[in-house]
Length: 99
Image 1 (cartoon, rainbow, N blue to C red):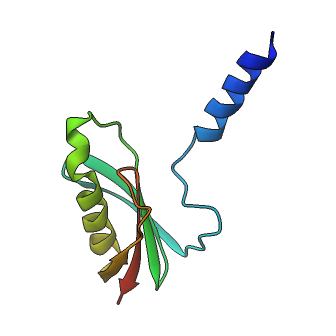
Image 2: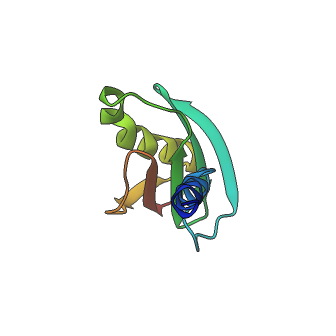
């Protein structure tokens, strides 16, 4: 019977500490900043960036989180976003840059 709680703990641990970029993303710099009601940690290099939202947000507050992530990326990098990754969401905004 201890297997079910053990699996639950593993799932929770897998999602704990999700303020890191995706696996395989090679970044050179990071910067933390606040955009609107959201706080982001932006990881970036000359070609790509990823903004991780660090704060909790109500369901209604998530509406602008993706836009805030894009703004955070442009503010930190000083570059324009060429394209957003199709798998970007309200927690992780991924973008290709045009510097």
